[in-house]
Length: 240
Ligand SMILES: [Fe+2]
Image (cartoon, rainbow, N blue to C red; front, top):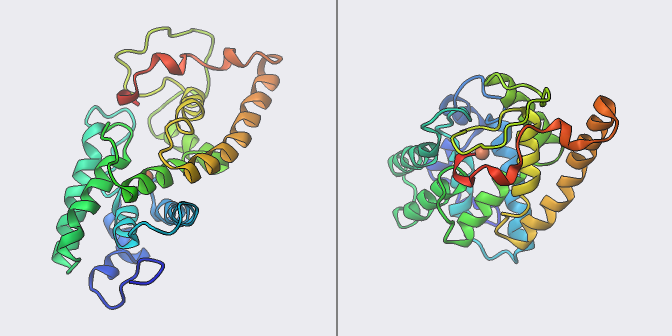
């Protein structure tokens, strides 16, 4: 196995090619397309380096490229099951294509645990890297672009029109795109599981915070709270 987690001529390698992935991944979802897999892999390599090059990339790499085989919309009540379905499908495909069987469980766990809505704690370094790498792609300028795309697909408002929603107990998605971004700001950096992931996340929060401040200034003077409909602390983790 090389430094990049490639083991050479194995058939399962072909599964991770851009062409095969494009066939496997849901059409029309620009927030979870092949470019998301490539950015997540780049993030994973940066975390792997920052954490001392001790993770098994032969587990991290297939988990990264196959983690969103099943991706359900943010407002779909079955969303919490998506990462387990992705993991089952990934293991089925990897086994069929000759992936080392001793590592299948580790890949399965990393895929299940990557999702915030699954609420499964990542138990291995490889799973923590996959989770942090995926979450980093929800931050920074790319994270903003993805948030607006997702908002468009589920018919969210861009920002609060004034009516405040105090209780969010039964809500399965933030009410507006800006609330989603605010929750990413509030939670994702806090919930990073590696020191390197946290460091990169902290950098990526800066353009997001700047964006929200600029937006508030443009809309209403400078009161940032007017932009949001919910307090991110009021929304249970498992629901978003
Ligand atoms: Fe993802």
